[in-house]
Image 1 (tube, rainbow, N blue to C red):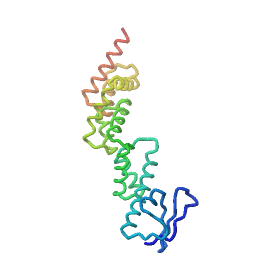
Image 2: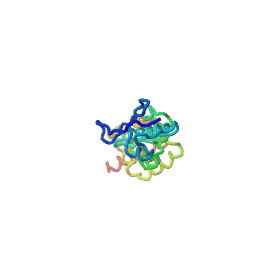
Image 3: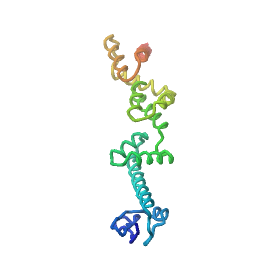
Image 4: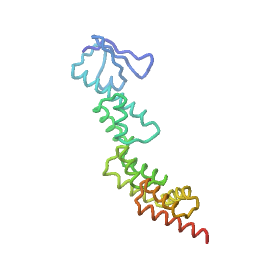
Length: 211
């Protein structure tokens, strides 16, 4: 395929419209012009043209991925899913997230710890955190390390659980209310023993306050 002309885009100054003799028209940037040695009259083989088109798709997907990330963190799997949902091929989406990992834009290990800390701070237990990590596409072998790292901040976790129990019980020591609070903690991802211990510690703190 022979390039008939290369003209700067009127709408996007950083883009150049490349027109081929068969009427095909593509938009490229200065880096792609340099990398592929594009100029008027240059003939590209079918392989070179396919490679150029692949690079344009990848470049577009990278820009889309950066927009998807915006100001919030996402896992590798979440970004890949969103790219595919937006119309990118699975192969291009995978290459894009590999690039994001290489520049540090996505880091599943750090993201998993952040998720664990967030849900602990809201008064949720390990089971709920594992559910969240699974839902967000974090690899299973990262779960326990993330939970251990989050658990290192035990004071804030205990404060969050106590805060939840204070709202739930409102100072009540009624057996039925205590049972409901224990069940509520179980639903939030704590084991039965963890929930009982938390309620017991909460009662001890109330008794201390009354002395």
